[in-house]
Amino acid sequence: MPDNNSFLATRRGKLTLILLCCVGFMDFVDASIVNVALPSIRRDLHFSVQGLQWVPSAYLLTYGGFMLLGGRAADLLGRRRVLVTGTLVIGIASLIGGFAGDSGVLIGARLAQGFGAALMLPAALSALTVSFREGTDRHTALGVWAAVAGLSSAAGVLFGGLLTQGPGWRWVMFVNPIACVLLLAPIFRLIPAERRAARDLAGFDFPGAILATGGMLLLVFALVKAPDQGWGSGRTTAELIGAGVILTVFVLNELRSRNPLLPMSVFRVRGLAAADLTQFIAFAGFVSMFFFVTLYMQNVLGYSPIKAGLAYLPLCFAIGFAATGAGQLLSRVGTRPLIIAGAVITAGGVYWLSRIPVHGSFLTDLLPGMLVMSAGIGAMFVAVATAANAGVRPDQAGLAAALLNSAQQVGGALGLAVLSAIATARTSHLLATRTPAPEALTSGFGRALLAGSIALAASAVIAFWVANTREQSEAAPPAPEPEPVAPGSGGTLPPF
Image 1 (cartoon, rainbow, N blue to C red):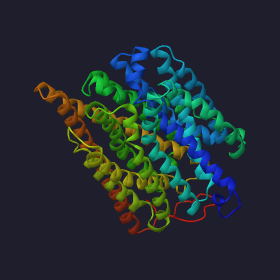
Image 2: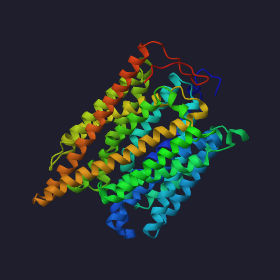
Image 3: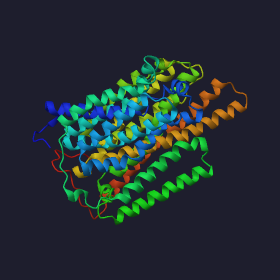
């Protein structure tokens, strides 16, 4: 930790923040950049319709499955070491994927990309929270990080359209090796090396690592496959029950382990569990918005890949602007009001989008809802990230970052699976009644977006309920002991 009162005010602090945000941007973009390229990938590599879904899903599977292990590895092995390893994995996997000659190689490359991102992202976010003091510096840094996280989903669709219609879909993969080479030197220069004592690694919880990774992989796999297999199918039920059993055994193992992968004491940090739950529910409604609006623009309005990508450009700027403004408000109002207000505003924007007509217009039917939604999600991203990292000890920063991002990934996977089922059921029903395809598709997309807005509204209710419950418990005697604050913190923030 720098001795300066404000590390962010120094040149090194600014460069560190830029570097870590670039890492996060690359990882977040990789989750959505292939979506617009899917038709071209299918033609070139002869994917089946069912197999094509694994191009985006393979990344999410290992990304969510290995996130907890990646976060704990950053705490135990050193953030720079894990960050460099993840960068190399993504760069090599992307290069292989770009030269893929068949579907199996591309899916394998996407699986490896997700694993690399699961190492990089928690290491980068924990490095950010440790580098910047709690208070104005950290609020500003997390505000910029949240702005990057918010706009990256839209930027992924934009870049995917530009690259696919320009040099070709393979450049969706080839951009990563170039970015990784550019990142390596700054990582070694700006992120300090950490020496880990042998006792930090003694008795490492290998059973916990296997159980956590296996349970998360099976859970994400079940959620990804559920729309095709059917939610009521025996296979889906068995997979979900199996994941629940494995994760339950994992928790029991952690309670008995001397050096647990997931120390349960981390949940004593005020705001962490509430922030994770809010992130989980909110992302179930938010991530799906990009999927259905993109399908609506291309399959109903007839937008080209590049036009669909450019349609998200205003969204990128709006999210960045909202997140930056929210970072400045945090010290005045705290995280709780921003989370609740952000969730309500985002729900309103997605509800607006749910009313899309068959012969819609970008300016009147899409842009207003996108701008409203972006204002809310920008503020919510900043507040949730701040609440989840406030008061976390430096030696658990990677774990806290992994928990927050696991909630995000699993929530997004669950939301997409459930909302896809809602959209498909509605569209299939209308097609069976001889409703024209554009009307049937639009109605299905609208029904799914409506469900997404309800999920976002529910996250606001959950945030309000948790906050109200906490206030009541704090008012009742005896007063609880104050939670420890991270060493070197430069200020306090109202709890979530």
